[in-house]
Each structure stands twice: as C-alpha cells, then as structure tokens.
Amino acid sequence: MKYKRAICWFRNDLRLHDQEALAQALRQAEEVIPVFCVDPRTYQKTPLNLDKTGSFRAAFIHESLQDLKYNLQVKGADLIVLKGLPEEVLVDFAVLHQVQAIYFSQEATAEELHVEGSLEEAANTKGIVTQSVWQATLFHLEDLPFPIYQLPEVFTTFRKACEKQSHIRPVIPAPDRIPFPTDITSIGKIPGLQDLGLESTEPHENAVLSFKGGETEGLKRVTHYLWETDSIANYKHTRNGLLGADYSSKFSAWLSVGSLSPRWIYTEIRKYEKEVEKNESTYWLIFELIWRDYFRFVAKKHGNSIFKRWGIQPDNRPWKQDKELFMTWAEGMTGVPFIDANMRELNQTGFMSNRGRQLVASFLANDMELDWTWGAAYFESKLIDYDVCSNWANWMYVAGVGNDPRADRYFNLLTQAKNYDPKGDYVRLWIPELRAIPGFDIHRPDQLSKNKLLSLGIHLGLDYPRMVVKPKIW
Ligand SMILES: Cc1cc2nc3c(=O)[nH]c(=O)nc-3n(C[C@H](O)[C@H](O)[C@H](O)COP(=O)(O)OP(=O)(O)OC[C@H]3O[C@@H](n4cnc5c(N)ncnc54)[C@H](O)[C@@H]3O)c2cc1C
Image (cartoon, rainbow, N blue to C red; front, top):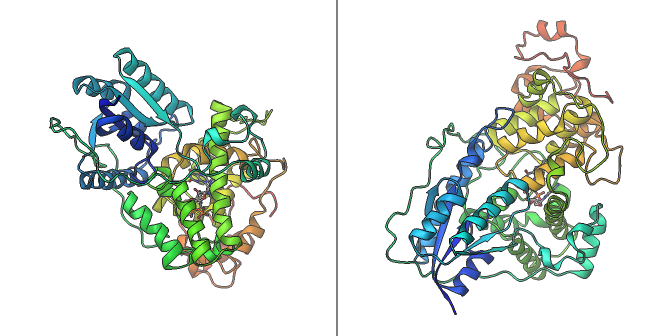
C-alpha cells in the first residue's frame, strides 16, 4: 500500500539524477513534496569567529537550490523552502500537510547525525514514518566487504578490497514526473547572501573556474572534462597543476552539495573508456573518487575523533594556539611566497588545488606547529567545495594524526615549489608585487636582503624577506 503523501527532504543531495531518497519517495507515495530547510546552525559563527559557511559556498548553494527548483518545476513539482531547524519546521510542515513519510539522505558526521536523529524522533512521535538512505559514495555502505567498524586504516587495503570484492550500483535515472499536491500555496523563498548576513562575492579574474552551482552546471562540467576536451585522458599527468580550469576535474564543488552523483561520474568515465580511450588517467579519476569514499567511511567509523587534535592516533604533540601567527597563515602573510599565494587564491576565490591544500596544511601543522584543527576550521569557512569528511580527514592525514602508514610525512616546500611552480608563474599571479623584482629566486625571498628589496623601491605590503616561520627544510 502506498502512502498518500511523502516529503523528500533535500540535504547535501541537490540533484534529480541518481537520487535514491527521491526515488524511494516516488515509489512509495502517491504525492511527493520536495523540501529544503535553511538551518540557521549552518550559518552561525564558529569558535574562531569565522562564518561556518562563508560567502563562496553560500552563493554556490544558493545557485544550486535555484537550479533544483527549476528542474523540479519542469517535472511538475516545486521546492518548498523552510527556514529553521529541520526537526521543528519540517515536522510542523509535515503535520500541517498530512504527510505520512519523510525520505532523506543519511550523513556520516556528528552535527548532521544529530539533526537527522532529532528529526526522526520528532516525526515518529507524531506518527510520521522516516526513511533514510545512504547515497553519497561510489561504493554503497551495505556493499563494503567488511562491517564499518572493521574498515582498514590504510587506504590501499580499503581500495583493493572494494575493487575486488564489491561493486558499484547502477545510476538511478531522474524521474519523468513528480506528482506534487495542488493544495500547497506557501512555497518559500531561497534566501540570498544578504538574508544570511553574508557579503556578496565577486568573480575573480584569476580564478581557475567561475564555479556556478546546480546540477545543470555540474553535468555540463562533466561533459566538458570528458567529452568536449578529453582532459580526462591526461588527468594523471596534469592533476597536480595550479593554474587553469582543466588541470583537474573541479567536480568537487558539485559533489560537495550532491549536485553530481559520484556513481554518475563513474558511469560516464566507463562509457568514455569504451567509446574513446581507456588509460591510467581515466582510472586515476576513479581512484581519487575512491579516496573520497574512503574519507567518508573513515568519518563514519571514527565519529567525533576526526575533529579532535589527536585524530585517530595516540598523539600528544603540544599544538600551538597562537592567534596572531595563525592569522599570518590565514591571510597569506607568512613571508613564504608559495604558501601565501595559495592562501590568497583560497581567500579570493574559494578554491585551492589539491597540491596547494596539502602544502599549506603541512606548513601550518608541521612548520608553524599550530593546532591543525584551526586550519581545518578555516578551510570549512572558505572552501567552495567544503565537504566535512574530505576536509577533516585530509587535514588529520597531513597533520600526521590520521590514516597514514608513514608517520614522518613532511613536505619539503622548496622542492615542491620548484617542481610544481618552476618559473614562479603561480606565485607571481597571486602576489603580483613579486613580479617587479628582477633576478631573484621567487621561492627563496629569504636570500635577498631587505635593503636590496627596499632599494628596488618595492612596497610589498608584507614583510618579505623576513619569514614569520622559516620552513624546517630551507
Ligand atoms: C587539507 C585538505 C583539505 C581538503 N578539503 C576538501 C574538502 O573540503 N572538500 C573536497 O571535496 N576535497 C577536499 N580535499 C581533497 C582535494 O584537495 C579536493 O577534492 C580536490 O582538490 C578538488 O579538486 P578537483 O575536483 O579538481 O579534484 P580532482 O583531482 O579532479 O579529483 C576528482 C575528485 O576526486 C575526489 N578527490 C580528489 N582528491 C581527494 C582527496 N585527497 N580526498 C578526498 N577526495 C578527493 C574529489 O571528489 C574530486 O572532485 C582536501 C585536501 C586536503 C589536502
């Protein structure tokens, strides 16, 4: 027997393709109401007085919701937008509209689990059935070759086991039509940045990509990266780049809000391999998506530990909590050009390459010896593609308190800068003041005397060549 009416509660799954929660609601109810809740907890300040969701991501989410609304309208439905705690406003809405069941995606981390637990309790008390589904990963939680508490602590062991003993479920097609009730008159407005108390963002001319939120744009980006430019066929060799739109896929922003399904990307790659070319690069993009899976399962297994300074290791390092020093890092004013350039890119565009993220995280944790959880919280605020599991588990990994078989992981900044930015083009793009200094090694401003700089009449606006913290290996 079908329910008369159900809600599909959209969370980080803002899409119609491969949408298991929506598909189940449509199978089991005569009418389906798509709802999104603007939860004020998502927009509050964090203990470091940062916006939990900064302007870049907020703008991206806004665009994603607009696109979802439009796509739902095309299918005969709409997107109801409620403001408030889902466990209150969504349940009140459900009672008011005689909804019998609520379908939604399961998350993996504490705050999100708290919300869904509270919602389930409140809904069930009112006699409303709740049904959650797991759908953010390539490999389904239920298809892992081990129970989650036995998840291997080493990525390679995890990957090999999954590749051998598991499978990836097929993509669920987007519905043709969504039967939407006719008696719902109050739809609700998608809040803009101003409504959320955030400053608006401006497109930056140096940004790697002008990210635009929404399933439509996400799908276009996949078409671009695979079918239009064949960039995927070279991905393994370009993925450590720093400049330009296509050195890496940039799928992360759409994946983070669920506008792209990883299984859909996987299916497109397999199709590309059949129809165009299969090589180590096409596989490598799948390999990276498996990293993404891994960190989500790590979060599920280890719960709150991924947010703690000691992570999942017996760590008792005396992490410094020096706000002034931390701000030099955050603002790109450390005096180490490669670090500062990456932080400026993040601050001005909301994006940073994977290589950059590894290096600035390592510099903060291993050279500055600052509390890495501060760095992770800073990324949470700034990244357009912030994903709670990928962010905190990667930070934990780089800080040496996560899933890393090598305890001595330390990035030699100079070698890295010289390998990945040999001519200093990247640094010059983000620290244009350095363009004007002829004949010096852009990655080693410490080798130039301050007098020399001054005599060149350069006003750098920061204290080059004095380092706030000198990298250990220089
Ligand atoms: C300190 C630190 C913090 C990070 N924070 C985030 C975050 O908040 N959100 C996020 O999506 N990624 C995060 N990453 C992982 C990675 O840097 C980004 O996924 C990647 O740079 C996004 O660009 P892309 O989509 O072009 O990646 P591509 O190189 O094209 O990779 C394809 C996809 O694979 C996945 N992927 C690639 N590398 C990783 C990785 N190391 N961990 C998990 N997934 C990966 C992503 O979904 C990515 O979109 C972080 C990495 C570090 C070192």
